[in-house]
Length: 433
Ligand code: PLP
Image (cartoon, rainbow, N blue to C red; front, side, top):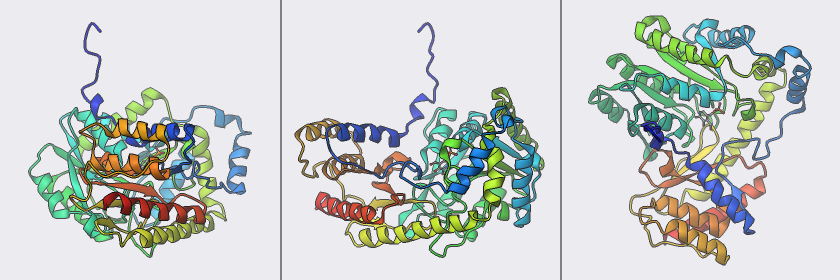
């Protein structure tokens, strides 16, 4: 090319989850049956969408207006519905002007970081959902700035370390928290969120809370949305319907902005995100129209509760199977539908293997794991996949040096889920001897 055309942040955009699926597909082609534990799409994993929900969507598909554009910020009636949900729960008060719809949170996330001043950083958890860390790093053209989550303490953030990193890095302008969390399944107690808010207040930062799993909390855990504790600190809560209805194909999510008028820079920043949306015109119309009808439906709460109970049961099954393996750190999933399993330091090395029965598969794995710089957990993941057909995601692909992997609780068939865990346990024990 006549001039450089590659963005400085291009190398920061990685999404390992999709890379592993490429290998899983190859294995399936070669005849190895695969348990897909890698993608957080309940529908792809066989979640049945209730008939009443489909009827709402089918009815809307008869209305011409659902085929048109909608206002840039989103349908007013839907934003007003969300405002009433928020304000009735005692949260920081917002108006319809404080809500912006996006084509899924993926869109909200890339715009939120994309329109931040290049030298301003948002400190992200480690491990974290990589759409955040990669987009944030891509905006800066530098590796992510992060704070550790502690597997020895329910994957909660190390607050003192977060404070230190904020204090000594003056480029940090914002803090990201994900509650309930992907990839760890942690649910933050209210006090912990308050402490993060206090750090933001002390250092004049804004907060981004990804709360897409806000209504998927179980095992008797209690938490609060950012809006309930933010006080006068500027903040953004990101919410959506991909996981909760679940309807990831709707590409529908939104942000609620708190205290936009408290800081003129924050106000202009939010305006730039809205302007970017305006340039694009708007987000998907039909899901916005369906959202209040689905959430208000008399069967919605019972449906959600039944899903929470299933995840709770599966969380306990997974925890019981894996908790006693020496060298492995496991916490029960308390929200969302992921479990991160960490290996103690030094447990993994570059010599461990698992027997792979198919010659062609063995060759493929040898080729991938032959890279001398491969992360040990990635190496484990490929051996596990080839030997047992279980497709998990290495923890190091979630922006952390910590070794481990992530599974999901999404398999609807309890027997198959338990079988997968038996094989997984056996695979880990055999690999790490
Ligand atoms: N935020 C978190 C924490 C997620 O885990 C995911 C998807 O896995 C998303 C956002 C993406 O949501 P959406 O489907 O609305 O783009």
